[in-house]
Length: 181
Image (cartoon, rainbow, N blue to C red):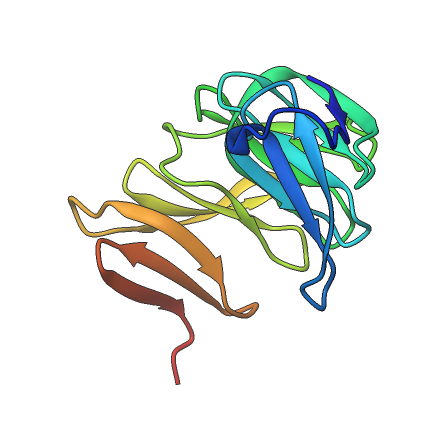
């Protein structure tokens, strides 16, 4: 997988990341050789790209590749405050943590396939749903806690609202988990 800025190339919108300034001004487009299924951007401007069934890769906003993983990934990668990249391996049964340089920090097996992409809090704890449970996963010790979800709950996405609250989207309903005032 490679990335480059190709202003005269065909505009296949599945293979492009548009770079926009914080003020909303278009800066450039980065074109990739594979379809971009999921993209995350770190605070230092590294673009983490996942193409389902392909290894993930990190790029500078110029299109220069920083690293490429060797294992196919699934879903949207999460990036911790320290710059570590949290992603699910292609079978969704393992949470893979990579350093900002693309080196493996840890591989954490999950009890069953994850049903959504991970989210990460400031402390580096990751959250995913798998096998009808919301899992809290420490980068040091693996699965630390789980919360059973009602039978048949199909969680579409997770969002971290604060260190104490997580929002789950279940169909058209948003469910808050945590200390609710």
